[in-house]
Structures are given as structure tokens and as C-alpha cells.
Length: 114
Length: 235
Image (tube, rainbow over the protein chains, first blue to last red):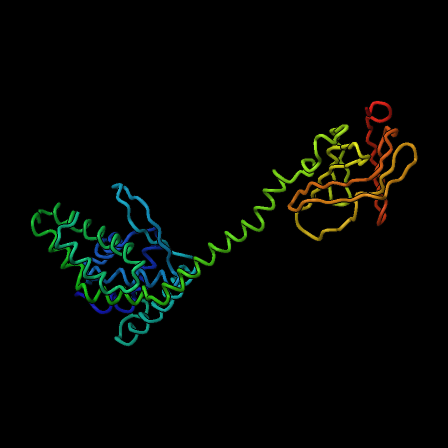
């Protein structure tokens, strides 16, 4: 099943902040990681990631800096801020409430989410 | 490097971003994304099609451009530029009005230079330090001039950098070992964190061989005696 609405549906913020909470990453790296971990469930036009990242930066959830990666190419890395970390905690909470509610409605086990 | 097709695609996206100052950064970021993707496709064996595939994956230029433009709004952009400019200006103003006087007081502002060399009978290097509360006063030179002026050059600084400053007035009453007290004269000093000042008394006896500085104000006291090349040695 492929989901393609907005960038990543309602969970864009949760997913991006989670990835950036692990390590600083540049745009293409984020896309590859999303694809890899979700078994290509999340498919979106890659270019649309950048307006979202820039929005996160404008909101103060991430900051960016230029740095050379392993290949020696200079790239724009994104780093989560303290404000971003707080927001991530909030997003995770909401996601749990949401998925629990969905599970209850569809009749599954309330503890079914991983 | 991108081919003209790739360049055109990115230019197309950028054409929607109205705030031109951000365009270069966006361009660099999108270019490195395309190049990474092309590299991956090439490795996977898509030699000729790699660039077109990468562009297709990236998405519609107009859609991306319009979304980017929302995040790089000219009004916000200009506010940001103006704020940064204001900060730079403040730093410059700060350097000028604070840094410069400090620098000057450290290097240029020795009042010793104001005394004409031809008029100096003698110049004694002194190194006596006294402390009043947190203020440290260091007597540096005593200069006797032909016209009878005796100049005491000193600097002072606060041992504690922060906190209330106590104005301690003058350095004290100037007298000599013959019992003469000197009131007529002048004083002056520089600014900054360690100003160098001059206290001048007039008609200082050329027979005295010691100048005495007595401070006794606000229950604080010190007495400094500086030996002079007095008496007959003046000539």
C-alpha cells in the first residue's frame, strides 16, 4: 500500500523529527532512510521534502548548516533543536492517542500498535 | 555537473522563489540532491536515463517552487535581513564606542606624552600600588618640570569588574617632606577600563626630596611616599 497525501500525511512532523533526533541528516539522506525503513510505503515527490524542511527551520524545530560528508561533497545538514525535541515528544504522544483510538474503532486490540 | 536539462529544471523551480537572496542556497541544496540521485541511478545501471529519472522523482517544478516560495517569503526575508543588518550595525557601534576607548586607554592615552620633553627636569619611574576597596591605584611616574610643576602619573582599575563603582575623588593630599602642602594644580585622566591620569601640583619645592600622597576620605586611608631627586641635583 502506498500513501501519498501531503508529504507523509499527518505524520510528517513526527517522522522527520524522529529521523533528525537520531542524527543530523541532509535531504537526500532523509528520503533514503524513509524509503528504506518503511519498505517504500511512503512515496512522495522528493522535491516536496525541501519546502517542509525549510518550514521546520522557520518554525525553529531544526537548524541547518553546511558540512562535508564522507564523500567530501558539501551538503546542507539539518539538526534538531531543543524546541524540535519538545515538539517530537508532543507528536509521539498524539500519535499514540490517535493510533490507539483507530485501533479501538476498527475493533482490534487496543495494545496492537508497535 | 548537471546537464542543461537539469539546470533548466532547477532554474524553473527557483523562478517561483521571489526572495532572490535565498535562491542560491536553495539551488545548491536541490542540485546536490539531483546529483546524488543521478549517481544512484547510474550505479544501478541507468546510464542515459539517470538524470531524467531523478528529475521525475523530484516532482513538478511549479509545485515545489510555489511551496518553497511560501517558506522564503520576501517580507519575512527582508525582516530577517534587516534584523541581521541591525545586529551588525550595533556590533560596529559597540566596537566604536566601547572597544575604541578601551584600546586607546591601553595604548595611546598616557598623559606623560602631554608633558613637553624640553621642560622635564626629571622623570622618576615609580611602581607603587595601593588599593581602596576594589579600586587599585598604581603610581607610575613622577615628573618634575622647570616651572615647578610636579606631575604624578597614575592609573587605576577595578579589581572587581562588575558591581557598583565607588567614586573616590582625588588621589589625596599632596605634600612634601618639608611640610609643604600643595593644593593649587590640576588633574585629568583618560577613560576606559584602566585609565591613566595625571595630577599636577604647582610650585613644588625644588628642595623637597620626597613627595607624599595622603588619602584619608570615607574612612579609607593610604600614604605613599615617593623619593625625589630633589635639592641641588635639580640643575
